[in-house]
Image (cartoon, rainbow, N blue to C red; front, top):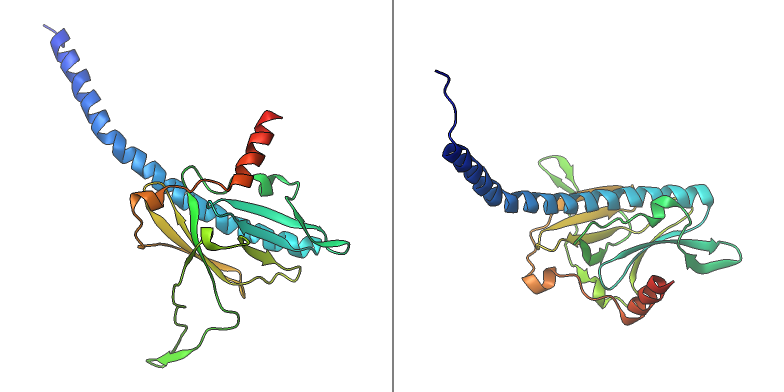
Length: 214
């Protein structure tokens, strides 16, 4: 006689699978959020490379601007000869792309000193000590913090902290001399209120409302 599942057994299996799925879902959601933080850092790294390359190709300065609400804008000189101080969004797809993923913002910035770091000799090896980390929240910059890429490919060195809605953070360091970008997890803590994205400035809010009505 062929064995078969009873209706009660099938219902029990479905219930067990449902309970396991409900218990596992928060972990999957947290993993997805962590991936968005890492993806944002990688996109920022790629954006740095693109801005540097286009500044050299077009012989015009490119700029990354960090708004007080943690958002990021890509700009370029309108005309390096006739309007060198006017910056506009470049009309290219990569510059219009959303770099920071859902819930991720730039929390703080550190401008690093120019020139090579001091060199120490430890155990007959040259060691480049890390620059001390002194970060400034983006909301404290007026005008907004910015990073300019010159037509010769040079740019200042800078650090950013990217934080997601759950409070996780990564530290992104750009060496302007070599254009090397380092990404590492940042242990700096933030409470629940600090983890939330600040409201955009009033002028930005008005602009967004105007665009939404067009």
